[in-house]
Structures are given as C-alpha cells and as structure tokens.
Image (cartoon, rainbow, N blue to C red; front, side, top):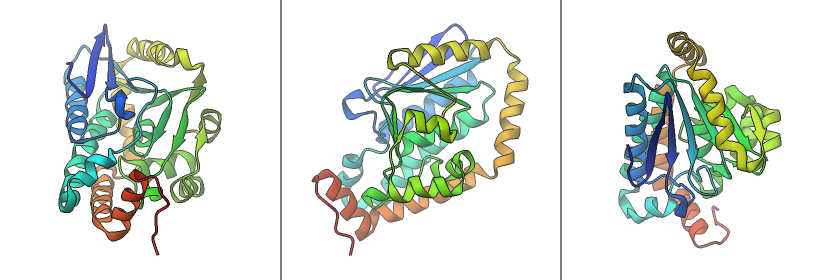
Amino acid sequence: MTDKTVTVEIRGSIAIVTLNRAESANTLNMEMGRDLAAAAIACEANSAVRAVVLTGAGKNFCFGGDLRGMIAGGEAIEPYLRELTSHLHTAIAHFVRMDAPIVAAVNGTAAGAGIGLVAMSDLAVAAEGAKFSLAYTGVGLTPDGSTSFYLPRVVGSKRAAELILTNRVLSAAEALEWGLVNTVVPDADVVARAVEMAERLAAGPLGAFGVTKRLLAQSLGALESHMALESQAIARQAASVEGREGISAFLEKRKPKYG
C-alpha cells in the first residue's frame, strides 16, 4: 500500500510502515490518522507479514499532532480531534493486538503522539541523535496516542509526570536508561538495525508472539477504554480557552498567557 501520508513496504515477511509527511515533521493530520489505521489493519490482515517496522520519513520520527490542522477547524476543533484520535487509537489498538511484533525505528524527534507510537511498540531502536518530548502541556493540551497509558508503565509514574508536566526533553541515551527504547545506534543505522531485529523476530513463532503480546497488553490494563478517555480529554481541552491560547501561542512563536 502506498499513499500520500503513510507508506507500507513489504520486504519478504517484514512490513515497513513509514509516516510520510516529512515536510511537516510527520505531524498527524486527519489523512495520516486514517492512513495509519488502514496500514495497521492491512498489516494485521496480511498473513505474510510476520513483523512490522514503524518509522518516519525524513529527519524526524513524528512531531505529534498537526496543530495548524487542528486550529484551522475553528469552532469544530473538538469534533475534529475526536475523529483524529479515533483513527490514531484504532491504529494503536491493531498494532498492539496483532500477532506480528512491532519494532519502532526512531529517527530524529519523537514528540507528543509520536512518543505514544514508540511506547506502544514491542521493541524500539533509537538513533543516537533522537530526542523525545511530550510537549502536550506546553501548548495547553493533554496526552493522547496512548501516552498517558504506556508512559507510567514504561518509565514509572513520577518520571511520566515529569515528562508530561515539565515537557523535559530526553536524549536517546536517557530514553534508553529510562526504558523507553531498547537500544541506541548511529543515526544512519536506525532503520537497518530495526529491520534486522524484525527479521529475527519474523523467523520466530508468530502464534506464540501474538498470544504473548496480548497477554502483556492485558496485564497492563484496559488500553482501549483509556484511549477513549484520552480522546475526550484532548478534544475538550483543545476547545477550551487554555487550549486555544496554547496552540495559537505556539504557532505565533510567542509565550502563552494562561492566567
């Protein structure tokens, strides 16, 4: 499958899913949300796919949501975000539940929902120059993309709160130390190393992997219902005075005025 905002390349038993809005740092707009959900469903339905690599085109993995697309909707920003997050969360649910293991190849910056995509992956390879920033509260928004579900479980509740509330930027080395990624490699090698990892997994027992993935997911709690709460929260916050000010200030490159 090839389309404007997401590509799916099949290499033998590996599917390489690439977020493909490099000119916009792979920010998620409505089209990409739909395309990512379609890509996840296609990978799950393809019996030849035994492992998936998820990465971003260009210099960055994913900067999170497309704020310009959000604010362009004006008064319709709340329903816009409810729909956008429904597509994103559908993609995540399918990636998490499918038999094929997911390996994230994190190039450049992962921010906002981009971190959710890293955290939901079964394994993650980061480039040495990769950076990780939640960024939500910096623009007056709340987490989506499973970030508020996975981060406390991956890095611990105090560290998750620090990342979300202070928007601290993690280096690749810190992300490795905190358990957000499994390994760090030279920038030029990140996709190749993720593909190597995926190829090793693809040679393994797919059925056992799938059952194990779902057992692990179940042990963490109710992912889908939590993501529904995330959708409601970010949509309402974006429509609030605080959210509109945060987004506008970011786009206008000024300091927001919240109180």
